[in-house]
Length: 415
Ligand code: SF4
Image (cartoon, rainbow, N blue to C red; front, side):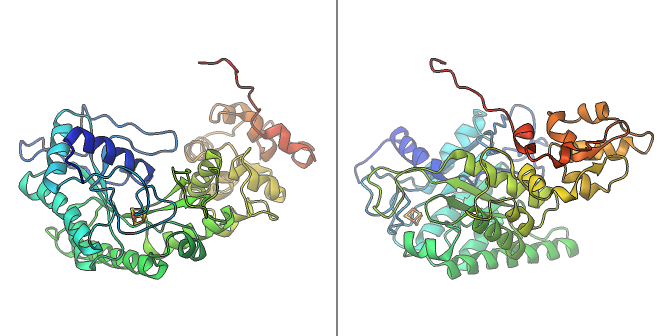
């Protein structure tokens, strides 16, 4: 490998990391160095928190240790047979970069992943060394998210969790058949076994923390995973079901969905076109319904078209579900329980909580609800208020076009 300077390595290894979606820093405990000890913080003034529209945190230094890899996963630009320029950081170089970017307030933490070099254990040792140096040699208190290697020794993954805020292991593809076809060197049972070990460590850490205040914390922001969407034939229904199973079995904080993007010199087994980005967005919305709106996975899957198993792209899954199950509506805003109000399209968690708080003092009219939602036209057919009853509106055969967002004509010469 030709000698590259730091700037060239950073250009290559930050670019190579952009395919990883799982870097949001949600769920972390507050920690800082306001008392003059250590360096860094997960909170505080002057730290820029930037989020992409789909919720991804972009204020982390997100890089790979190396983009060389001994595996040959078809969907990956860093695979062994890919004709890309390779680079590799030493752990010390990553530590220097993280600290200098942190001090300049460019970032609030580090997201580190890597291709596999020599062996899974060797690579994992290098990743752990970065986190260990940051925490122990530099008393770094910023956020660290480590992507771990499923085939590495569980003791190394455990060590990683003692230094990192979040640990993640990618399941890569929604189905075992997809993984076998597109990443033949990876194994779904081994990936799930590694996720099971992390869950075990998380549970032990929680138990120990209840008994001893000084017990070491293991990945306090939990574990997450990522699935590539659109590289195999999995339907949205398959993806929702898999995600629900993973949340349940491994107590995941997040499942990230990453729309497959065609790569240069792509393998012939991959689709030629990327899936619509809106598909990724709809999956995030369906994920949100399970985590915050009390929908069961099978209910969310019911929002998909029964013939294709795909969520509609033109309307959100909550609206799609309401249109399929019209017998559950209209819901009376002045009497319905929280669970039923959460099902009304256009009413978010905050709006529902505001309705519940207000109706203790007075009955709500349609205008009151209108102040809590972006589109009363979308909400109206699904609810009853003091001065509003949808009557025939809820049963109209053409309800969908009335409540779907209007299509916007894009400007041909817009900047
Ligand atoms: S192991 Fe990871 S880095 Fe290596 S080819 Fe597969 S997906 Fe890419």
